Length: 108
Image (tube, rainbow, N blue to C red; front, side, top):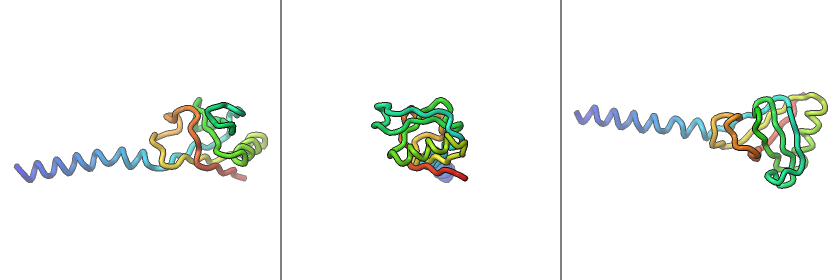
C-alpha cells in the first residue's frame, strides 16, 4: 500500500510540473504585421501592433527602434518573428492586450 501511495504522489508531482514548464517557455507571435497603432497609452508611447499569430491581441514594442523595424516589415510585406520571453500564457491568442514583447526579428 505504501508503494502505491508513493507512486501516486510522484505521479501527481510530475503532472503538476508539466503546465508550469510549458507556460515558462518563450512564445513566438510572428508572421505578417496585420495592424499598427501609435501612441496608445498602454504601450508607453511605443508602437502597438498585431500579427497573424496574435489574432485580435495587441502587442507593444519596448523601443522606437523596434517600432521602426515593424513599420518597415509591414510596408515591405516581410515576415517578422516576435518573441515574448517567459510568458505566462501558452499561445499568442491567449495574451492579454498590450503585452510588451521581448524582441523582434525581420526576415528577408
